[in-house]
Length: 264
Image 1 (cartoon, rainbow, N blue to C red):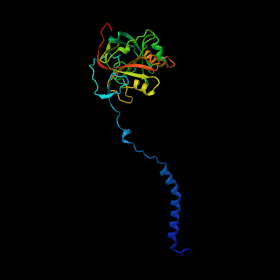
Image 2 (cartoon, one colour):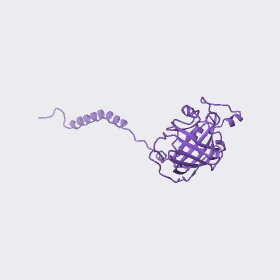
Image 3 (cartoon, rainbow, N blue to C red):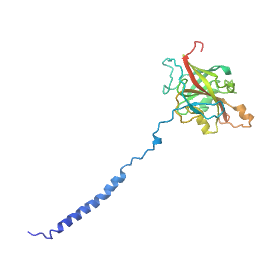
Image 4 (tube, one colour):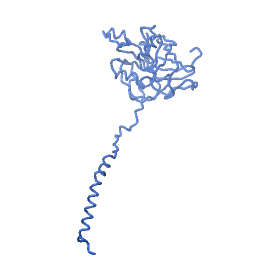
């Protein structure tokens, strides 16, 4: 039986049908391609390891740190209740601070979660003792890798750190926690401005003076107010807690860890 249309018309009809089918699928294909997430290129700098550095300081206020090899202290293994080293736990126990060259002996240091000279820290200092912040915006505990921060009053509440400005490079700082004594050596003096976020960041950094640097050794920052110095320069600014603009910071590096003497 003959076809109702010429046989050569069949390919044309099929071709047209296929074209219509492809046209109908094209939007969904394009949409699928557009919806597929693209993998962003990552610059090499974003995957580079953070710098591992420890800081050497000059005794001049505000001096910029330079990279120097880390100091490896002599270590005596403490009791299980005394955390040391990075990630060893929060410093929940009080310690004591002694600085022979400044006549400071057995000053109680109370740890708290916070940052230097905030409201909770100031309340601790008002009791005549020292405060030591830890946590996200604070420091670490005695002997731990990072920045062990200590703040106390110089003029009020008995002025426990009244003679801190006289502490010099090379002086010894002793911190006792339970049955362990940590010996730090002062390596620099810094000046912190409470009106400068950059300056505060340098004070509170894991490597003092070098925000963003990875700590490789245990360090200490002992800080008190520079009220007499500010007032002598005509600067009477203070914050809500009565802190003057500037703080005097003494920076130290852990040199030795040993068993505390019975008298400590």
